[in-house]
Image: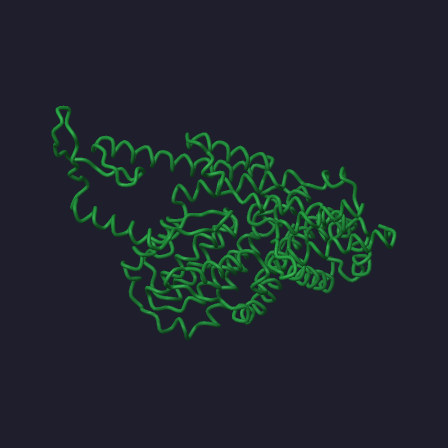
Length: 503
């Protein structure tokens, strides 16, 4: 692509720089408006500067990607509501034997869960659980926080729904869910094992002083309480007030001690104005309100049936994706099926959707499209292209290094938008298989690149912030502390994983 007029190039570059600064540094002192507003500002500047027309701006917004993002977020909200992540917490603590065992479990569970439910979601709901288990067993939290963040990033590389950049790659390349999964899943599994081995090497001494017996049952119970109290909200990532949580725990304990069994003695008014005692059970869905034993059993039965339906719909969505159905409409269909099955006003669940993320993506699509129009990305790629062919080891190494650096400087999704079509077109000259392999290399490297530094991915920042704000047992994961582990882990995992990426 030829370069545009110098004035348009300068204005387009200025708009992109504004977007980049606010995306990477959302609280920059001179304009602390955040990533979402910064994305819209960059898009607006592209139109005002006439780098692109309003019609081109609208057409740049990729609706299938937004639809897939929306659908997967709704499904994640209902899975959390159905206690899926509480069960993941049980899986981590069940018969765990010491720190090393717990570390390996966190690596494996977070990787698989991230591939199916996105890395950000898993980090939001599991961070406090990991902190609490570490505290209760007198283990240092740092190894487990790094295991959660890094394994979530690596695991999310395996599927198109694991992270946003994979969504972009899958839809732009036209790859099916199965093609994407089969091309990267081996690299993902090997990467998780290698990453866990690096963590064990780094923290072997810290974890060697752990207890050999099973994880203390009180720790497991307390961790379960934390998972129950922590409710997933992508829009706010908020927590219940600690005083309220303590009060809730006290109320639950009081009810348990009063009952001594499944039933409570509740006082009710009789028809003639008197008061009588009757055996009743607390309704868990109605905040401690007493209902008759039959009604309590009915409520429990309905809850279990609803949870089963949520899991079946989710499994059906995954099977549909594996069968090659349209990913966006499959996710939206699953989301609406869950809304209908809930049989309640959907507003409380829909309020948990991160609409700011959808708006951020819309502005980013416009901004990146405008920057592409200037011709600068094409000129830079033409300079690198002869040395970055994926049919040679040196070419793959150089391309991976470019992707890794850009992903940490400009973030992974803009990197994919800027490089994706160019890398694929260059590889397509060799063969169609090489084109698909180029897309998969881009997915693998841009995702694992998030482990390089604390700012490399949203999952890292979520773990850091959740850990820092945790009540009474918070932990500050520093930038340098992450970087010391992140650099060698990212380079080694990326290099080894590239060997197993296949089209």
